[in-house]
Length: 324
Image (cartoon, rainbow, N blue to C red; front, side, top):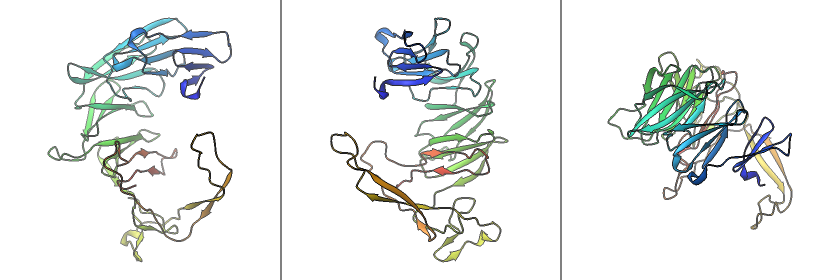
């Protein structure tokens, strides 16, 4: 059994392709058979008692109950990777659906034999993801990369707001990454225009628009301004420095000593061992950028990852720049 064959391990059970094994009882196995429909994806439910499989071409999602030995079916799943999401407590499941050439969102009760509670029609053109807030109060649905549209719904299915960063006449790329703060009060939307917009849950307006300081020197002793700009550029200190308390940021540079750690051509393993060291820098550092190849598929453009600190006072974010 290869590690690439293992879907997930949870609660003493491991899934390998279409067979479930018990890590505590080696003699116990459970085979999952989708027949001619084929198996595209498989995930565990939060209670570890159910197993969800997606057939080829997203024809349906099958819910397999290990404890009750029963099967349930979820119809009309949207053909996208992030088409379903469990609430933080694991009680409810939201599923993106495609019915009558329109996007729909359904809520299922996982404890009542996966009974559907409500189904609503979405305002999106082509939704590609659904995300729950950590507090379980909001459901976010965002459109594909060609449309900048993020819709927020309540647990009851009520539409709260739809946010768009551009005017309807502007044809610009949309959202690439999303992230909720641990309290669910802030929502970060990373887009293909190298900007990360921060929304609040009070009126769902943009509180801040952050950008990475590319090709500009960053002084570790001063740090960055609240909007992510260097406080000192070309030996000129930002005028807002007096109203903002500067703070030091630690910047490390990686050094490798010894032999190279590149893999051999046959991928049998490292050629020789090497040592990695990190040196704390005190001089200003400039983040260099590289222009991506537009002829390659999925170019590295836009905000690829956003993450909140658990204390919410700090919010670091990693970005894939248009030229990095």
